[in-house]
Amino acid sequence: MLLKTIIIGNGAAGLSAVRSFRKYDSASPITIISKEGGDAYSRVLLPYILRGKLPYDKLFLPYAKELRRLGVEYIEGEVLSLDEKAGIMSLTGEETLTYDNLLIASGSSALWPPVKGIEQPGIYHLWTRRDLDSLMEEFRTKKEVLIIGSGFVSLQAAWSARSIGLGVTLVEIADRLMPLVLDTRASAIMAEQMERFGVEVHTSTITEEIKKDGGRFFIKLKDKEPVKADFIIVGAGVGANIGFLKGSGVEYGRTIPVDSRMRTNISNIYAAGDAAAGPSAFGDEHVTHALWPTAVEMGAVAGANMAGKDIAYGGSLNMNVTQMFNVTVASMGKFNDADIDDSYTYDAEAGHGYCKLCYKNGFIVGICLVGTSEAVSLFGKLRPVIRKHLSVKCPPAKMDTFLNVRLFEK
Image 1 (spheres, helix red, strand yellow):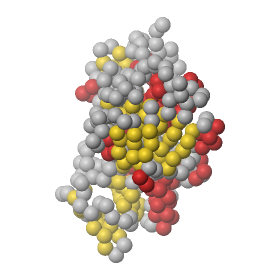
Image 2 (cartoon, rainbow, N blue to C red; image 1 turned 45 degrees about the horizontal axis):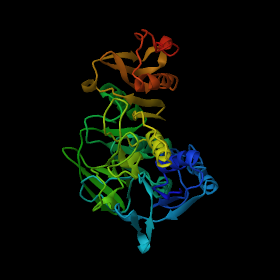
Image 3 (cartoon, rainbow, N blue to C red; image 1 turned 120 degrees about the horizontal axis):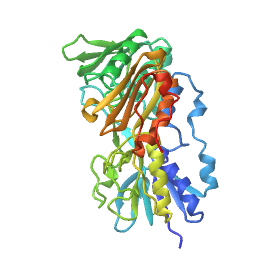
Image 4 (cartoon, rainbow, N blue to C red; image 1 turned 180 degrees about the horizontal axis):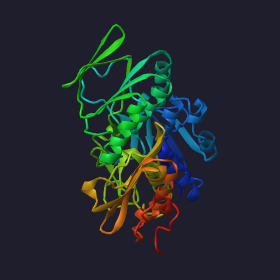
């Protein structure tokens, strides 16, 4: 019996689900609905395109032809509402679609923080292709940028701007940079590195109001001198694109809770990627990791199960790796002091930079790095160790030894 499957979203989770579904079901009809429209692209490559590290055409994923080969119908439109009892959804243009299985892989959108005057021309996110197109013009014609927030996207934007000589000021409300990615010491090292490259860094700083006069922005900061800028980039978090679930029977909060099969509380409705909260590698029942690899993993599990398989997700493990300001910045698992029992630090040894290996109850649970690209090889070794809770030998005293050591026991 052929079942009609609809996937909302053509990002990492949705495309991964299509591939997985077709491994087990080559005949049932699949429809992808894309709110943004156009060819699928990699959101994680936006900063690299912005600073000229990659040509623009490398932004796009080679999936458009593959979707046609896999027999996928592609619809550009926005889902407005969902009737889960009737298996019907409403789209823009008064179009309605029926489904037997539904995957919500609608992703997330960048948020505006509660700052007076923040939503006006000349203030951008770096989250979509449209954002990229706008910022490329600003980078070409302007001289000074203010960046609000200090997550990966914000710091990549700062690095892109400095790489072409723009003046950069960065404002973060928390007491350190990248609070969700780096521990206190690593954040301080990163701030010093950015300042060496000419970025003016302000932590523990509240942006109160943004005004524009004569084509320039004047930004009022609490208890600090105001800042001037030609344009502004905001990286203050994201929110799931799930407003269309209002009034439906699908349970949701900030994201949609799913079980290990990616099912929601409705048996034929699944969710994956930024819109979903699923099990973690540490045993948490519902955690959202808005990361590309997590979206790919969750989408693959959802696609297989929608095709009739019974595959459980092993749990997401947060992992971030990037290079900027001439250092590699990376973290995985748990690395803040409140979440660990002990740690072992390799600090600037043999030129590798700062690296902290973290333990809890005798198991390695995380790692944090501001250092060299060679040291990132640890992450590949440790990922299965953390996910499978394998026993480990005591880490060697020298990082050069650790980079080549056999980490886990059979």
